[in-house]
Amino acid sequence: MNCHELSKELIAGYVDLAPDVRREIDEHLRTCDRCRIQIQNTVATIRITEQLGSTGARREMIIRLQQKIIRVKRG
Image (tube, rainbow, N blue to C red; front, side, top):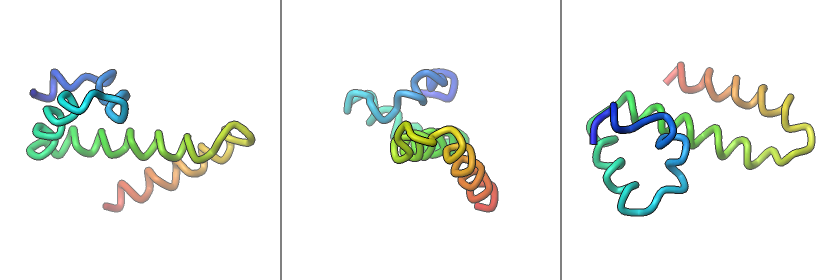
């Protein structure tokens, strides 16, 4: 698998992939920092969104996402 094959749709659904497909992606992620960071950001966003629930989610989600982006940029 290469970066081109690892489309945004596949990245967005990474957490729900079949184990064999996920293993193939994980192999690619071991050697590709760019895709690994993209997967990490996607998974973090999904987890944050799930934690928020539906009440007051929009405002709180924006704040938490901004905080996460700042942490990722700092390394």
